[in-house]
Length: 256
Image (cartoon, rainbow, N blue to C red; front, side, top):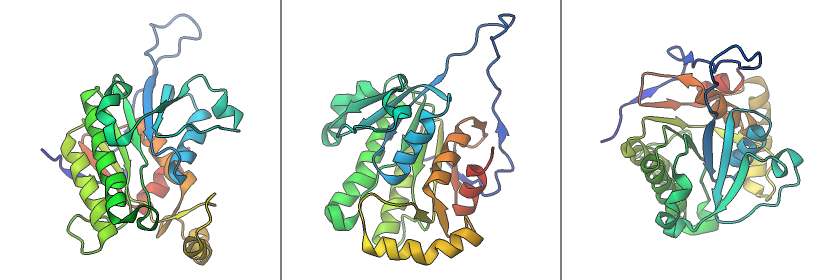
């Protein structure tokens, strides 16, 4: 049954989760074990930034990068990080790799492709089918939080294919019923892509002044989106699902 969506634009009802006790002095009780996480879509722009930032934090004791190809990282913070492990899977037969999702506390889903690269059917398969299946296996494995990168304008009833795709993905991921589902709808993603796309490059250049003077209105830097997702993990909420629009993402992602 789909859980009720409650937008969190102002984040007013969120509070910081309790911090595990500090055992450095040896006088407190045993410290709670660190959480574990997985990332699907770690080669995309938001996913890459998420990996970079998690490699520099102590939020998780284990981070599984679940994907179809191995990445040779030049960044030593990632390459030499004992907490980060790559797990290769076939997304078309993801059920065969369900053990990779077992016992993981938090799931990050940054999956996405373009219609130009994969075609309409291929884009639906990657953005929707793979994301929903990941959520299903995550719940089956005991996942407590699922953080999904969607898009501004997502609406399952939209006549626009991309907006409908993202909206339907949101609806179906929430319907999986993980205890907490957090959805992020960024605006235009501001980053320097490794693969050059002329139309997107022109769009980013056009939006750069808007992003500088009015951040979070219709744009979000990928670094801010990743930071928002990480910051949100340690917050508590009474809602089973929450949706962050660009302004909410910017606010959450710029918290210290």
